[in-house]
Each structure stands twice: as structure tokens, then as C-alpha cells.
Image 1: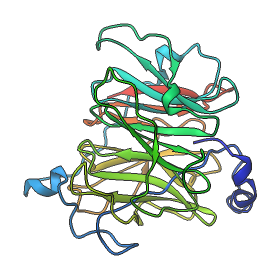
Image 2 (image 1 turned 45 degrees about the vertical axis):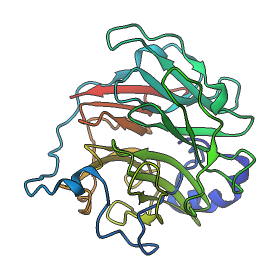
Image 3 (image 1 turned 60 degrees about the vertical axis):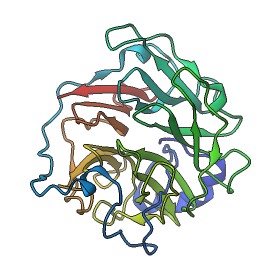
Image 4 (image 1 turned 135 degrees about the horizontal axis):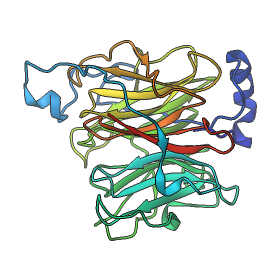
Length: 319
């Protein structure tokens, strides 16, 4: 999420000045929460794995630092900027946003198996438009994808859209706006729990980007009213969330350390608990690091960064 768009410049100028931030950042989106009163977290996340399991021995993740960071191999030599990586659970498809023609669109790179070579990246025509299309989030099964767009047909400005497909071999349906809830002035960067019953995203309200959450009782139910994740938010920009461990752990980008993005992590024992106090993922932070995706077990992270200088690139690390 590193792009500023003409329609947002006026609203962002004051915010960027107030926080000492450079005007090189994308917009980010809001999200919805369970059927609870607006602005409050639900008593329980109905249907989510940890909440329904009835376990009494659940413990929060103990953070283990990641190993060395390297460029994501199939995109290492691509000259255009790449951002917002997201993978299917089997890690055979990676979707991202890129702007080789100055227009940010949705792209994909695929491989046939975990030991096969990645094929050349290609634009996903059915998910892209002549407008801004970014921050994709593909579901674990690869049959649903959310993205942020300011294309015609939805609410004014950039908000969340969703698309489905019947099988992994099928084309994506035309994206439709997420109308289950009212978000912020701008909404982007959605992330889903593995069971797709919890979503967290970034939302701009006035001049402040914060993280919001929403839940639903099944994958066919409506998303609930979004509520802020107050324990994760700060007076600075907080955005680009990535859920893992069935929604009990999260990594997100924040500007609370300085004017550039840094990755922070927080954990909780179950999805009904509040998150721990966020801490920086020191081993990953170099220069404007954001837009993470993590495997559900937390062993693999993919994110974008400016650490190499020049355009934004996608990097990965394991633990």
C-alpha cells in the first residue's frame, strides 16, 4: 500500500504533514465485524475455529524471528513495482498488484506443484480495470479473492470488492462491491482468517488509517459491522494486516516508529481475546516494509519493501 492517488491528495496532505510522512504511500481499507453494536467487538466470533472448539488450553504464539530475507525468485527480475502479495494455502498461486503501464492492476504468478518452477507473471484481466486495483487477498482455497478498487459501480472512492470462481482452473467472476457494511472514507488491504469467518482491513477515517475487523457465522453469511482493533491502532498510520494461526496472530505495517512503514506483530490465545501489545518484527524491518502475507502456521512470510532501492519489490523469509 504505497501509492497516493489524485482523488486522495487533498485529504491525505494534512495527515501526511501531521505525521511527518512522505507522500509515497497507497491507501488502505476498513473492514467489518460481527453482528455487534457498531464500534464494539463481539462477545464471541461465531463459527470461527478457535471460538467454537471449546479448548481451554489455547496459548498465544511465542514470536520466533524469521531467517534471512531474499527477493521472491519469480519476480526478482521484473522491473515494475510489485506490492500486496497474497498466496493460496498450497502456495501454488501468488497474486499481487503491479503497475508496468502506470496503472495498478492485479497480477498472478503460478506453479504446478511445490517443487515446480514458477511460470512468468501475467495480469488477471477479469480482476483488473482502467481504475486503481490493488491489495488483493486470496482465500486459502483459492476460490475467493478480495481487492480494493475505485472503479465505477461501487461507492465513491476506493473500497473493497470481491470475486469468486467455481474451481481453481476457472476464470474469476466479475468483482462486485462489498456492501455488507459501511466502511471508512477509503478501505483496503483485507486479510482473511483461514476459515474465512474473520476479516481485518485498513480503513481511513478522516486523516487516520486504522485496523478494523468484521466477522460472519459462515462463508455464505453477511459480514457484520466493522469495529476498530483498538489494541493494535495508534495515532500514526496502521494498515496492511495479515492474519495467520486461524486469526490468533497478526502482522501489520505501521508508521509509529518513523515516517516509513515497519512490520509489527501481535498475538492472542483465541479469536475472542484481545491482541497483545504490538511489537516490531526487528529482523524484517529495513526500509518501508509492508503488505505482509503469512502461511497459516506462520513459517513463511512474503511482503513488499523498498530495501533494494528503486521500485517496490516482493521479498520472503522463513522460520
